[in-house]
Length: 329
Image (cartoon, rainbow, N blue to C red; front, side, top):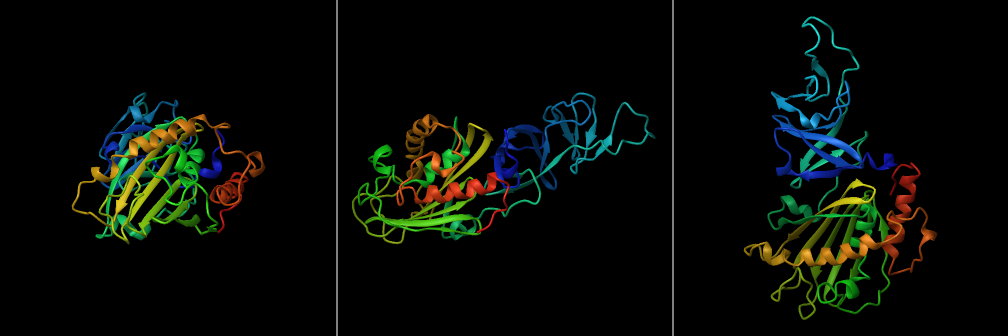
């Protein structure tokens, strides 16, 4: 797959619990990655021994050094080969004996990897929710779809389908007609807001595959969406976050978070039980889309000014990055 423009962005490959002190294989943008953790933190290598191409994830880690399962070549966390068992102790190790390393970090309960330097800025959370004592954040679910990450996120950005695909769960209080609203370019992607009688939805897209949807109660009354409760009050905010990790062209792992500044003493399950239903409704639609990838030009699909305003801007960004252009606000 042709993925070079996306390799400098940070993508999650796993939850924190999935990466241990022994190597395990993960896949990102079609590339096999061996990841583990040592005293200094998370380590991510291209899952390939430079010697004969064996998967390093099949080896073992001891004292921060990983040993290839094939011939025992050992690499430190920088990728430098520090021991070749087949050579005499005083023999020099070839300079080319290095494993390819990737940038890795642990944040928001996930393990993130950027495969090319310089890495793009790391995504943030609205209201600094993860470190804000006024918020409670939980992982609502992890899903795997046979769809491209671009199609997944474009679906999450779109609220014109709520009254059809999610009838009874996330319907817009004012009905299906989409009112005029503006979409703005930012230094990280795009942002836009939409307000109906019930909620104000503020969307923040961290290009390419992370979307926050901050829903703030404007008017208390009927028409609550699934993530709210009957005792909601004006000002209550719930942030739904969708992170699409591109395993391959049409293989995506989705991490979904829910953050809230209300009902902090109540169990998270009260605010996440609808997620599986919503995601399954979306999966059926998104996996049916053709072409599987976002079309290369905006003209390839028909767009409407306000219902598709966010998608139009998203595709403009995608076109630039596909062409190898530097990201600019």
